[in-house]
Image (cartoon, rainbow, N blue to C red; front, side, top):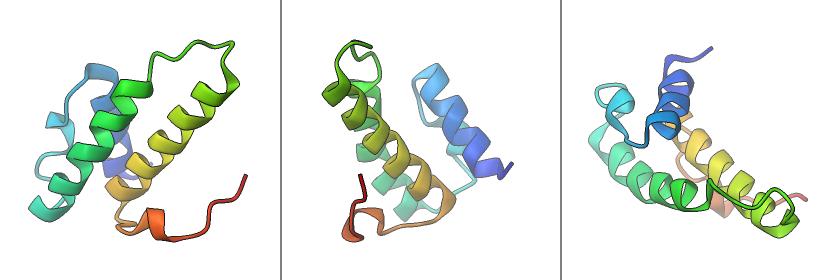
Amino acid sequence: MDERVAAADRSLEIGDLSPLRGLVSREVMHDLEKKFERAMALKDFDVNDIDAARKYIEAYVIFFKTAEGHEDTHSHGHHH
């Protein structure tokens, strides 16, 4: 597993970005902050709310892709 992926997972687990510090550039970290906040805000969704689950998964994937180094994840077409 990529070290950045493990750190991103840990960040969501503990609720802060400290595991990613030093693993990504300052520019990426700045971009990750907003994506992390969105994922955290959607994390505790009602498991019976499919729309909320989809929104969390989308935010989760965008956060992880950015952590991995795929910087412009939102400009590509979304596939559902």
